[in-house]
Image 1: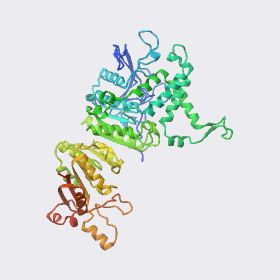
Image 2 (image 1 turned 60 degrees about the vertical axis):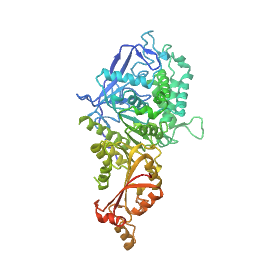
Image 3 (image 1 turned 135 degrees about the vertical axis):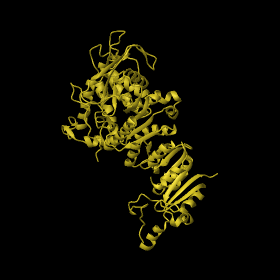
Image 4 (image 1 turned 90 degrees about the vertical axis):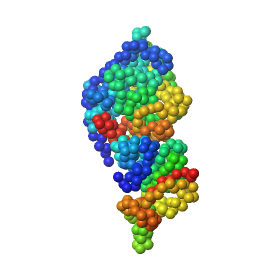
Length: 382
Length: 198
């Protein structure tokens, strides 16, 4: 049966906004960003009581463009399925903010931006950033645009990690943290996949130790490989099987050498597309940031202690076929919250689409998310 | 609210930490949160039930009770409630022990299989009993471990579980002296408040 949140409408045409922090900002690493800019989008109206703001955090390859359409582009935002009037994150009720994080490559300050000190692109000299840095810059932006407190901070995958960090670092500024297809830290296997992806970029002769931009080159082969590998981990064996099976795109399997399977063509296309819209230095930086995310590190490696000072309510959603951040990884978070005595709701959604499930429509997923936001909306207005 | 739930609610202290196993649509926990400022957590496996909990604002963890309760640490709740769920478990005895590891006390309710109407259906019709409390056919019932007042009390004895309180409810949820006189014959629903052996 379809979810009643399946047939919402689009937020329409959206225009990204910019927000500049002109003073030096000290990163977790100790390095200083002389200044930074954030690109963000908003959907819906902020109530006069300012109690209906929702922060949507993007994952590895996402951006501030979460919903609606840009005037010059035909493809909608990365979470358009979920955000809009009548959708789970209902923009008739909530004021939704989505920020492109620093270190990214969609307009916010990152490796491709000009370093004001040198007048050259930062390139590989861009300082390493952490999820904490992201969350703190988001909080500064929120303050800048008049949002003291978020009704919810929500994200999938790396986005969920930001929601968790929000709950830990700003307990009184977030009412609900919604973590979808998330983990409290990466496993050795997760890090291993990231390592291979980075190695592919490093091995590209056009990489030029990260100085490719200054030398007029771009490591698109490496970035393409990195993305192809990533894609394999985002899908499940079953999803790939039902989508492509062993279907042949061209050639004769009897002959072997010239044959191309559909799945190959798909990966090639995805890699190609990605290498045109993403920056290699950003990819290196963000996969590193993922590897290093571990909020429990500063609490004696104890996730229960880490989460015990949070004040928000949690919703933790995972998907049965997700093997990148499997339901067991979400359970670790749920169990720690239970042990910490914090209010948590969890749902394990039966979905065949692997890690990508968090971006896609499935009836129960939308029911859970939609019902949760509807309840929040009732609490906001009462 | 269901009579056994109302009775449970009346037994629970203000501001208690309550774990409700098989919490259904969250009615009890929502009521307790409102009337007694109870900090509750539900455990449920039914998708529709979980959605109803979410709509009520009740915190609920999706979990299969038949997987055990290792997720819940010792002494983490003041009261563990398991209403009309015992009979649907694969290993009710194992779970019963877990309840009193997690909570100081627990409340267990279940349909009494010794009720005279059930006995009569088996005796006179020779058919598996059905009732308002046990509406399923024998082949699709979730209730795989039915028991009577006597059976349950025998298990408590064996497991050295202390029975603090017992209520006997009739078919319409009513109580009365005759029910207490012949619980195993006249009681439709059993209500027990249990504690660890002193």
